[in-house]
Length: 129
Image (tube, rainbow, N blue to C red):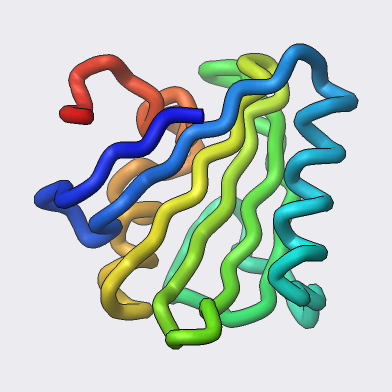
């Protein structure tokens, strides 16, 4: 686990989890969502477009260029902080983004855009830690 805090981004904190296999990643995502009483009530996207932060949404995604598959879930913490959880199945990485406002948290996803490889861009070494 690695954590980046006090970022000058809509998500003030990003926590990265690295797993040894796709099965361990899937289990880690499932456990995190379960531990936070997450219940999917809708998809997060229309196609591959994020339009806003949607509480209790989850979407699997598949990109061709760059090739990547994974999932994204959005929910609010008990203190109403917007949380976005995304996984990258090829890198076996889960990133948890903690925002300060729902609309600003969604901007992280819009700026990163799935077509550019969300988890890969969030895990880029240029991010300050």
